[in-house]
Structures are given as structure tokens and as C-alpha cells.
Image (cartoon, rainbow, N blue to C red):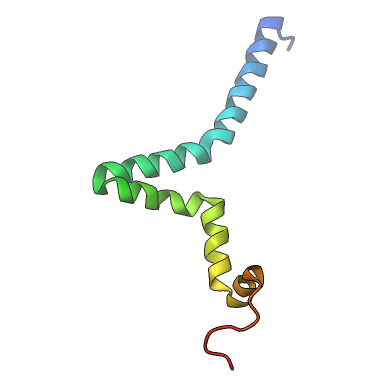
Length: 83
């Protein structure tokens, strides 16, 4: 079947809208989780809900979980408790 230029434009626009929605999907979920947490449990819960999606927080947790990397960044040779 032969499509008209208008049908082609509609198809292209629809494809672009689907791609934009897919890109925004994670952001929308994060925002909803934070908003719902704020409404149900308050501001501190809203902030806490953002931690799972925050790359900086995740990096800090990973760093603090690895004592050797932690002290290497601090340039500390002797760790507490070691003699």
C-alpha cells in the first residue's frame, strides 16, 4: 500500500514520541517514588527515596564498604586497629 506524506509524518512523530517516553520512563518512576514517599512519610522519606537512584550516593556507599579504597583515597597508611 502507498502511504501519503501525512501518514509518513504521523508515523515518524509517533515513533519519536515513543522514544521520548522510553527515555523519560526511569525519570518518571524516580519522581513518582519520591513524591509518594514525601506524601506518605514526609520530606526525609522523599530524600531517602532518591538515594537508590543517586550515582554519587551509590559511589559513596561502595567506597565506605571497601575500607582499603577508603583509606587509599584519604592517603592513610595505618588503619585503626592495625599495628
